[in-house]
Image (cartoon, rainbow, N blue to C red; front, side):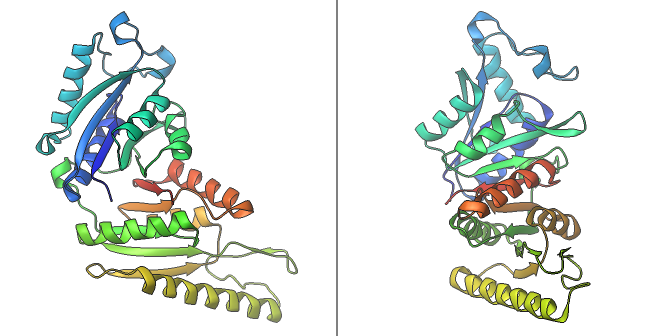
Length: 307
């Protein structure tokens, strides 16, 4: 669990929103908070290209001292001063410097914001967040524009959604979610999505009726798979459960990312905690894709955890 939280910012509203969550995690875990800005040759006066910035973005600081002052201002705006964060300025490629800093610190959690641009959600600093999802040495929390904009001290979690596929990374995410639920006094819903296509009936399963339109034999097979999935999920929860927070177990038959996003919306989840990758082979590709889908489309923060 985190003892050192790293929050890279680019001074955009999205990154300031993420800073509030970084400060809240620092409070919940009594962790150190480091606020990082990666700049392109700050002493030469270079600024990000117009393609990287929007008209409503604030003017970019022109010196190292100005960047430090801007970081301190961001900390004050986010209500994060109470955790006494450290301001750090580095130069170079953002994803490389963030990953290097996370290893050197070392950081136990990276918190970053996401942008919604051109109708398709673009991640903070271009492809930086997507790259870090694959390479970060620690869990990564992504905060979308729809996340609450309240100050760090006012942030609360009532409902955490934790989808699992029984892979090592998703089980690590489950332990993280249960511990966080205990610390924040929030309920945890553990979701397992049974992904399959019936080869005999050529019918895609429905989350409402996974056996709709199928033969009697197929219906029995589907029900058996669902019962087996429920039993396995309950056994997994018994093995890792901690006291202190209510836990709900849900099994659905649907594409995982669709089930995750739908359940998060219906339950008004405050946070999704999930593994960064599946168990290997085709499942690795499927679950990796699911993670990308969820991070891009979620309306609440998503915490991705590696094994």
